[in-house]
Amino acid sequence: MSVEVNNESGHDVDEASLVRLSNFLLESLFVHPEAELSIILVDTAAMERLHIEWMDEPGPTDVLSFPMDELRPGTPGRVTPAGLLGDIVLCPDVAASQGAAAGHGTKDELLLLTTHGVLHLLGYDHAEPEDEKEMFGLQRQLLSDFLGGDAPRETRA
Image (cartoon, rainbow, N blue to C red):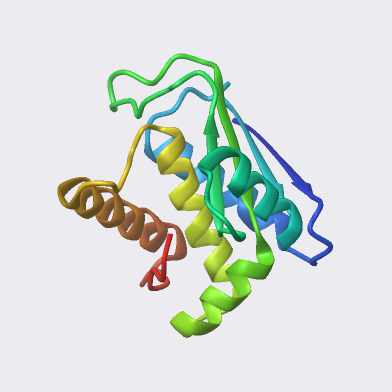
């Protein structure tokens, strides 16, 4: 797996843990080993611009996902084709406040948001209650498996 992290946020972020998590998620979801993922960390102003431009919603958000080749999760007997999974954009400022509200730190919130973003890139959504239940359940399970215990509690993602 090729996971590239570009930190433009001005925050000190544990980029290695984001890469380890991303590799774990892609392996767990049977994504081709040559798939490519980009994670970009931005400040509040940049996230607000992206949020307005792409979602037509004011204010910064926590995570945005931009799928490229529309890959979907594979199965144990059939991995996805190789390709560009896409970009995840994270805002550590928003993650810090959400993590504090949920009772955990920024690092755990960024792990949660990365998991959320990867699932969006693979076609999961939470617009409908049934889809939300499926996506958030998988998100919790994957993050719990990665961390070897309980996953951080979701706040908004």
